[in-house]
Image 1 (spheres, rainbow, N blue to C red):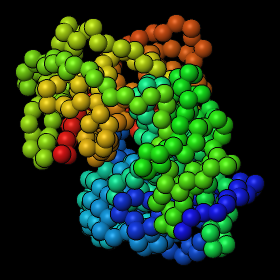
Image 2 (cartoon, one colour):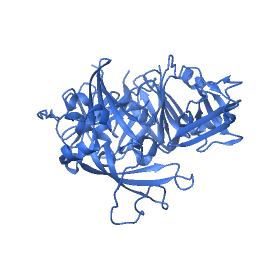
Image 3 (cartoon, rainbow, N blue to C red):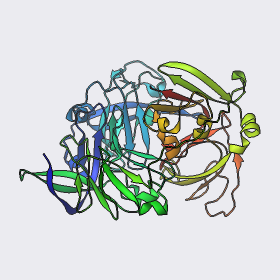
Image 4 (tube, rainbow, N blue to C red):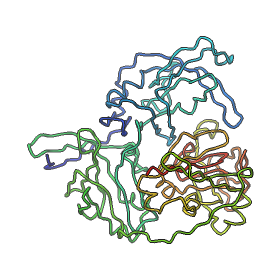
Length: 478
């Protein structure tokens, strides 16, 4: 049934939690008011362990709320083995093997495994008797698979996004008028316009039969196209919205509204004040043209036993190649490809635990550039169509479970860095090479168990920095 009209209600709402994903039968939205009013009756204790960069910690925390399964049931999510979490401060984490047995170890502080108790994943609105940070956004708590299982990084605080399974497509921006094609996942529907993240409006949708539905809507301000999608100034005046069949909806000349058009909240709709489309697909910036770039091959020659960074290529479950690099070879043979990028992100551990902004200017090599020089890697269009995934591996096995789509390599400027200028806004922090106000850059070699870090342009330290970077696995699905 078609939509007859849309009315955007003027009052803003704060998004509490958006649960989406391929494993969810229907996506579910809770506002902050909803979260505050939810019944919370359970108390559970959790053992929390971390051992990262030679800093070991053990703790016992008590949560107050209810099992995660309540939310999964509301979304009709079954057989969920992996969830992705996003917090209000930009922190991200991925929990795999969700169905595995996890436990509370009451003797963790004494390193004793005796008396362990089973623990389900838990949504907590209180910690040790006080409201959690970012309340009413909850903290999610997980048990340990074993007494040495590092589970602290799973304790995402202030979650506003939960993806069950893999993320669903929201919309794309393609064309000659932007730095690279961009793909915006549905899970970030309320985060797309980062300056107004977590803010929504209700829209009253009148159907052809005169019935009225209330659906969530977000405004994309005109600045979104230059600041988030990175369109060129010339392309800003040539933006064309299209539907799922590639047909023109309208030219974009001002702010637009996107809304969740279907009852399952899986389909994005488009409204610009006049034109309505319930099957919005994407935006053409400039012209749609295939990139016809000749394939250049440049393969490293470092031996495996001298490797300081590797790129492993997996196709249909089988390793088809593993290429090894050393810093010396990269500087000598790939020096013409070296680049310099600046990243700014929020680090919740800085400023004595209060959090703060960090800026890093790093020298190194674009991971996308290194990839495209390898004979096994397909052309850019295939890298961006969802058929190629990648993981960054570190020497301390930190974050290795995070699997990303290859289109993020260009969108977020993933860089294999060997030198950096690091500065913090609220005073000098460990590892800083400059003060925030320094006009000059002071580069220093990356320090760690490898000579590399991987940086990318996300808004929080957790997804932005991979310390002790040792390798990369690229998986070509088909």
